[in-house]
Image (cartoon, rainbow, N blue to C red; front, side, top):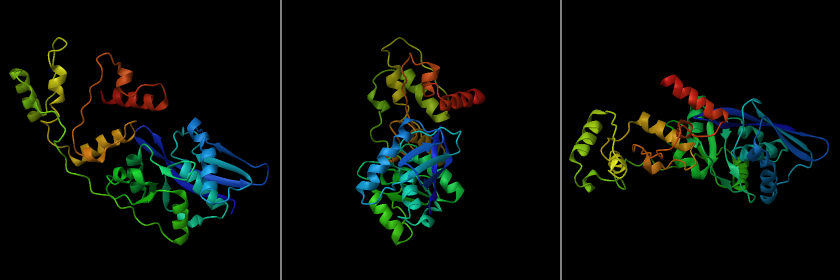
Length: 299
C-alpha cells in the first residue's frame, strides 16, 4: 500500500477540528513534504518523524513522501501531528497494519528517540472524539486530563516503538487513569487571615452566597487584590458543566490544566494596565478574532 490515512485533531481556539492526515508514497527523488497550511512547527515535524522512525528500528521509506493535512484551509500548528504522520508513514510503507488506525484519532509530539511527548488541548480533542464515536490515542502524560471527558475511549502512547509493536499484536489496551480528585480547599488563601476590613469581608461573603458581582474601589495598597484572592475560598465547588468549561480553557493555555484543580473556581489577576486584547489572549491571529467575535456576540 502506498497511501494511508490517519485521523487527528487541530487546535482551533476552544474547538478541536477534525484533520485527516493523508500519507502518500510515490517514486521519485526521496523527500518528505507537508501540505495543508502547516505552520513552522508542523513543517519541522518531518525531521522529528524521520529521526524517530529510524531510532525505533523501522525503515524510513526511500521514496517521495507527501503528507496532506486536510482540510487545506484550516491552519495547523504545534507538534501534535508528529505521531499521526509517523504512523501514516509506517502504515503506507506496510510496516504496521493500516486497519488498526481506522477507528482511532491520534495526537502526540515525538522526540528524536521516539518518545511521545504531551500536547496542549487534549481535553477538547477527547470531547470531540467521544462525540464522533472514535477512540483517541494520545500521550500518556495527557491521559488524566483527557479522562475528564466522560465517555471518551482513550489509549496511551509512551514510545513509538512500543506503540508500533502493540499495533501488530492486536487492539490497543485502554488507558488507565485515576478518577478526578474531589475539590480541595488546600492551598487557597483564607479570609480569616485578614485583620480588619470588616465591610469588605462582609461584601465578599454576600457576593459569594448570592452569586453577585463585586466591584472594589480604593487606592493602591488598600487590600483590594488581597481580598479578591480570598473570594475563591468562599465559593462552592463548580458544577460538572462549569468545571469542564474551565478545564477546557486551561487545556489550551500555555500552563495547561492540572487535574487536581478539577472543580475549583479559577482565580485570575491580570495587571491593571492589561488591554482588552491581552485579556482575551493577545496576538492578531485567526483564533483571537474568533474569541473577540464570541465576546462581542455575548456582550
